[in-house]
Image (cartoon, rainbow, N blue to C red; front, side, top):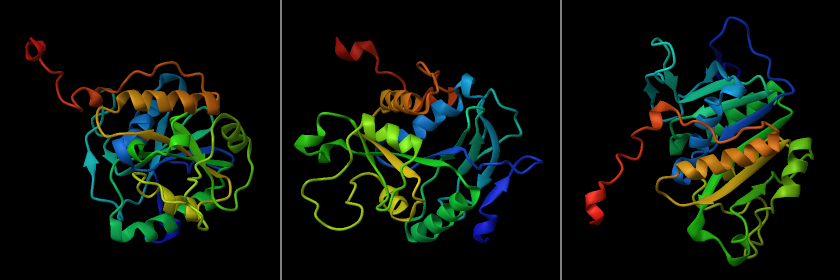
Length: 249
């Protein structure tokens, strides 16, 4: 497939993305971005509907049945695209990019983003909390922009709320290393100028509360008015059953 065939529409009319805000997760430590996207997609007030999917041939093969509330013929793919009534487009990525294909995937993804004409691109990512330096303990949330960033309404709001990610020990050009953030650094190196990455420090474990916290920040930034979101049914046994009380005497 070529870059022009990267997005495949699932509806009769081609969706119009121009002027919308794209929320793009990066598969990273704790899977917090993917969990946050699940909460956003299932928030009733956002009225998200799937409008298509992206070519996942550079991702680990993935397909899954739908949530119980969806029609039985629906299936989830590695890269589903949703549209909200709030002027948002959300990409839910359920499968990591194959390491050897990261450069090709990033090029195709950024080409689609440019051609679609999004007014803002919000990458949400997570980083390893164990790698924080002293100055980064004051907030769990940081942001990072491409080297030649364009100031937008969204990026301006983020810069007023959070400190930038700029490790004091890094003196090199470009984007500094981002431990645990997966493909985020590569995204930022090739992203459109209207891009901002919102990054949360976390650790591996039961990261559901981290996802709820990240959604609260996204809601405030994008003026979504979300309270605590209901978790989708697929989360029920995601981290196994709760330990029996007898284990603790």
